[in-house]
Image (cartoon, rainbow, N blue to C red; front, side, top):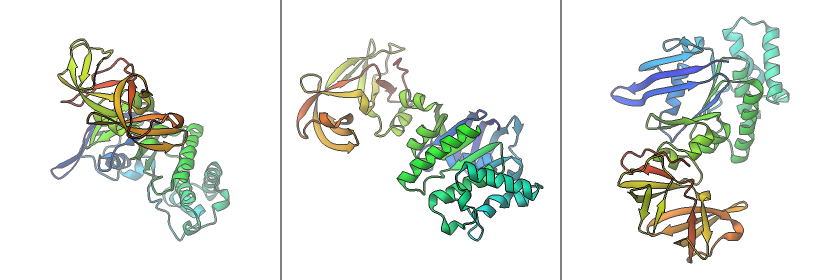
Length: 355
């Protein structure tokens, strides 16, 4: 396997810049996920690594070698596409073997060994003589992954490979990809707009917005300590609640409905701040706490998501199904302020809570 380094990488189409000065390092055997909304530049970045898009400026290194201007077929990478891109007239076996037959000098015996070994790893040995139209979506995706595996490349690239599958099959394929990464020690760069995929698959996650890399970290770091308001609102289902407050001396924040002290790494606060709290960090109390009005509820298994109104601010509380207050009533709400985050309203950047 190999390392991948993007140094000040930019991509422009005429006067329109779509990727802005990205610096990103992917370690050997790491599963790096690029995540962000549609149009944020994540697939463009992946295609630049693959060599399918030219790099306007900057440098791309694979395993310490500058490949910025190297042809795609000489970068020793393999890519799995959203659309599977299988030849419809070929069997699964031929689809997996075809690239090796055309681009390498491997013997037929070695190609056969690689195909059957990959098929065994992916549990598709009994499907090798079937054509794509005879396979389910999940089976086609396994064949597409197998076609990449047989090449034994330094880096595997995945461009939203599970987006065409139903929810149950996506869950199963996520587990399979996780297993493959752990068992084979693959270096993976994986693109998705689904933050659940990002958080469950990634060794580290790189969050993008409007062509700019917003934050890189482990899933836990991204979730617990978002670098800015975009990451805070994009990562998490449901998203983090952001409440406009006034900053006060001594690390106090005030709102028309409450005033709360926070443990901060700095005492001086901007006059306008955003307080960020996740749904599981809120707790109902029928006798005390900040008064809120209860709205609708949604059941999600053993838990429920309850909408509440704090003056004009809408919040979501995650609670047990047996603890749902009646819609339309007023109840108390406690914040876990030890885990709350604070952001500068003007810049959107985190004000570095110690929690």
